[in-house]
Amino acid sequence: MNSLTNDPVNSGQRPVIGICARTAPVTLQDSDLVVSLALQSHVAFLSEAGCTPLLLPLLPGVEGLVGRLDGLLIPGGPDLDPALYGEDAHPVTRAMSPGADRAELALVRKALDAELPVLAICRGMQLLNVLHGGTLHQHLSDITGHDGHRPRTPSFTLGRHPLKFQPGSRIADILDEDEPETACHHHQAVDRLGAGLTATGWAADGTVEAIEVTDHPFAIGVQWESGQTADKRLHQALAQAAGCPKNELAAKIPNS
Image 1 (spheres, rainbow, N blue to C red):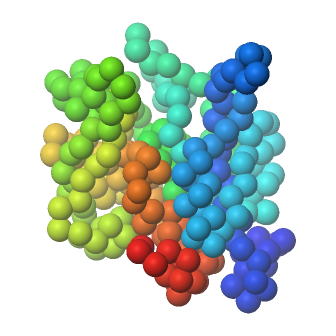
Image 2 (image 1 turned 90 degrees about the vertical axis):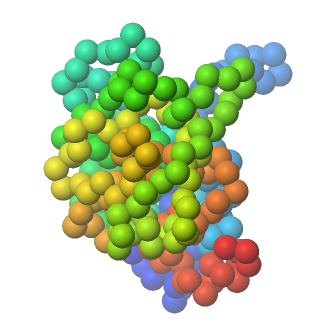
Image 3 (image 1 turned 90 degrees about the horizontal axis):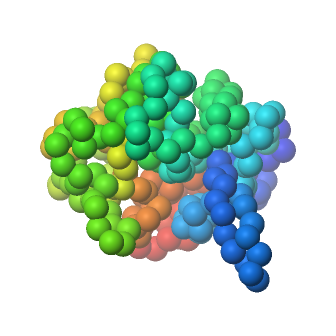
């Protein structure tokens, strides 16, 4: 546990979970602004699970906050700069700023070194792979021959695919069900798996849908849009790994 909360279970303090911020343009009161934000469901799910969510803007030096955290959530977002894994950009790649990419990579590296629990979602899973020396398919439909992972529809639609999990993996234990399914919206995916990672989930077309840091207590990446459905199990697992007792989670979320 971090130096500020020490033992949140015994002290009564809630574990602090950092959420990597994303930036987006918005219009408020007729003013065009750029804001730092997090998906509200990530905030709500972690709060319901007994944690205090903390938004982390991706600025130089953000990794210095790791000592104040009990866990880290890396959400979805724009594509990673392909230069990070030695490639030129595909025509449809839409990257975030290189500076923000570097700040996020430094933050995640330090969090893993500190053995903080980490949950990496969509872009977050791709970043986890690149951090470990892996590469990405920049436009998945070029590989699979279909757009099922990011459906082309007039409005935002989640792709649905059956999943296969590695028996005995952490992700299989968390999502313990007979017919697991993705709820995804991504056009990039893992190509070469990074060193020190284990693939633990796949779609039927072979797309890697879950990875885990092999020698880490709790560091999971999922390709699907966890947080954009009502399923809270991954957030609950992160909260438990960060120090929220399982019995407290059950009391806070009766239908978990």
